[in-house]
Amino acid sequence: MSSTSSEVLVADKVWMDGKFLRWEDANVHLMTHALHYGLGAFEGIRAYKTKDGRLAIFRLKEHIYRFLDSAHICLLKMPYSADELSHACIELLRQQRDRFANGAYLRPIAFMGHGAMGLGAINPTRVAIAAWDWGAYLGERGIREGIRAKVSSFTRHHVNVSMVRGKITGQYVNSILAKREAVMAGYDEAILLDISGFVAEASGENVFIVNRSGVIRTPPVSSPILAGITRDTVIRLLRDSGRAVQEVTFTRDAMYIAAEVFLTGTAAEITPVREVDNRQVWDGKPGDITRWVQEQYSRVVRGHEPRYSEWLTYV
Ligand code: PMP
Image 1 (cartoon, rainbow, N blue to C red):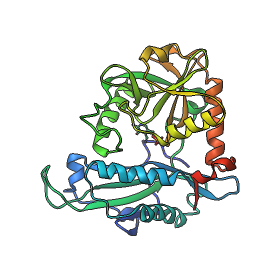
Image 2: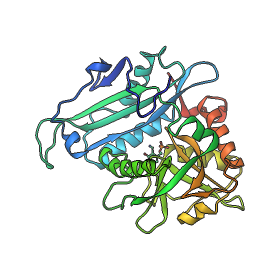
Image 3: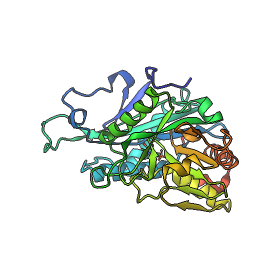
């Protein structure tokens, strides 16, 4: 079973501050600083059932390093090393092996705990890792047929307002407002522009376009985007297959006249976009490159491509 955003999550265990707790015991105090002011770092990681039936976490090392970087950027002192956090992720899945036999979504989170209040307070960092079942983030139909996206009325971060290299909890209010605006208007996802009006990223995914000459483009990491690990994976897979990928900025109407548009993210995986702002993308069906990337990504994360086996950490 996989959850949607409206379902209540339950699993058996949570790793919290160095201990394995029962799911229902993993609570925080009302006066948790991060709850009030949003100072926290988090990650989203997937584990897949591989071809030999074992569970493997995809690109664990890169996610843990980004987690540490996010904490460092927002001056959260991280009491655990990369090895300790990686081990906790593995152990959490090992202890729930039967439950997560078909895959899992892992959520490490570090945040300023309770103690003092006020913006200048420095309280001990709390660190936790939860795991749950999470199916297709933008829906099974979205993965198969593509989603409808809307350019948001909300602008993506400015690089000197938000720290765009960090996956920082409070920064997600911008994403939530954009996402809810899009969903309330009848779309599946929001695509946000940067302050100059160029395409940045979706509320929780990076954006790729393929133009009618087959040129593949995605905004560069100098844009206000999260340096997505799926984005990096997709660029590597495309380049290894002999296809060029240009990391360049482009305008919203480049999406309107693209042959293909797709989104990448750990939760959303590779999701085709069939419509942007009520303009059908090409024939409204996922294109050849999108299909190839979906298929190749699915093979890589499940251990079918030995060339990329260093990306898998078996549980
Ligand atoms: N952009 C944003 C704003 C995100 O939240 C995410 C999800 N972490 C992504 C892009 C995609 O990143 P990744 O591929 O590392 O999951």
